[in-house]
Length: 292
Image (tube, rainbow, N blue to C red; front, top):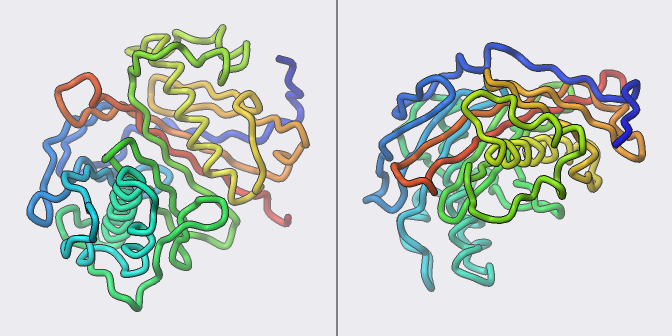
């Protein structure tokens, strides 16, 4: 795949990514192993709370489902409009993923202000409801940027303070091993495929999923700025052993020329002992060029 290297958006990555801190999960190096903490009578579990370069990140796991009607405990931690929105979704799975994502977002918002991991968020009808916009993105309170990802009943939210500079953030969570056919040819450029196998401690098969996750985070961060479809092969991302990543964007319509600094980071998250509970957590931030 031929790239116009002169038209690449600027990529910024920081070697300090591994200095991020977590509460209640005792992460080591680039791996988080944590005992899940329960809240509201074990209806959901805290998996991790991390201060990432892109913002405050919280992961939760839903232990019970809402079934036909919302239980009282959900109304204690979510906005009434959020509960009503979820109960109108067509399936139990979509309800559960919406609930766990919004609960994670409420805890991330709380943690970003208080650094509290165990406290329950207090949400009233006077607060802004975090629903979905026309693109499916979370509608965040004024002055706050946010992104949500989920895998079944596990939800992760990332929040960051907005600034005068236009910016977007993104987060993604992917299992390190899926057992499915490789998606490398579909989501990686030829250059990326040739570059596989250079991340210490990560197999080539895992690295395909890591790069996929990094691209998902970058695309989520870019979308609020560009509002356009972005193909997987319009970006090349090189993950580094220290948890940073170098990002090259080359959109077919040249819209990346309006973007300035892109950061992306990753780490391995293990929330249990089973292989299916081993994940890559990725995050990204994209800024708009000044004066545009």
